[in-house]
Image (cartoon, helix red, strand yellow):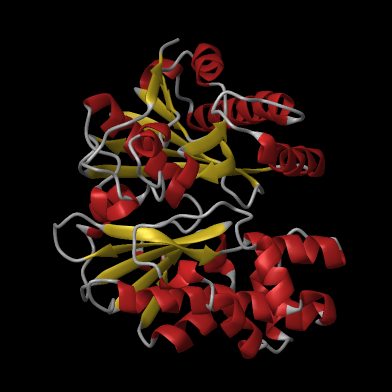
Length: 369
């Protein structure tokens, strides 16, 4: 099937859209992709929606700015698909399904609650293509963590990859998550800790910058390793997989224990990068075996300072997704195309070893035009 995947992650920087040909088990062709950045007004609206989501108690609650943000995110995702189709001169009838992640505004699996903004029915009508959305809900309702969802796609990609095993795929978005792969057994996966979200928030507040381009600011600073160790004393980091985090889970703890208010811009950025790297390293003893190779994807793959810190702490080969022939930027969008096809076929999206679900579970809600 030809499928399109959409991803707007917890970094809230834009929509990624990618084309994939797959049967939900094998990947036959990784097609073109586009990245559509959010403007400042959209980022502000989404940040406000995340704040308003703190009062949400049900998946359909839309207080404050949530309703406006949901309409906006749906429009932007639709426009991204339309732009990709136009660039390839494809018609809606050429596409079997669209996998629509939506925008996560709250993730509390302990309360069996996860909310991804996005109007699946409206998107299907506008595109005239079936849409699979709400892919985390079934897992969370069954008692799973609802995250990470991408390990099934990581396993499919890794089948075509030579090199040492075990292999770890690390996605550094707003939150960081890892997939451990060793042969054809079910992947082991979990969130590891903060990714880009705390760093991006820090840079925006201090310097009005959306992110640290290439890790250049952090490269000029000195990390406070003692402060990082204070954050890593939190019980989350010693808990075994599966486990997951909300985007803002460590905002207050990290700010207080890292002493960010007393650090320069450069030292604060370096310390937040060190926290991400150290939290990834902390998962290694909790995995079935130490990975011999790490493949880094997501926005963090473009951060040379973070990659160097990871290599130093992991004592293993660290490559970007692009270096192994994948796409650091489009990997998650491709994954949601893959997962949409799996959902249509009733194949599992999550596993006990990835989310703690009681059994391998399919999921997603299918919306027809």
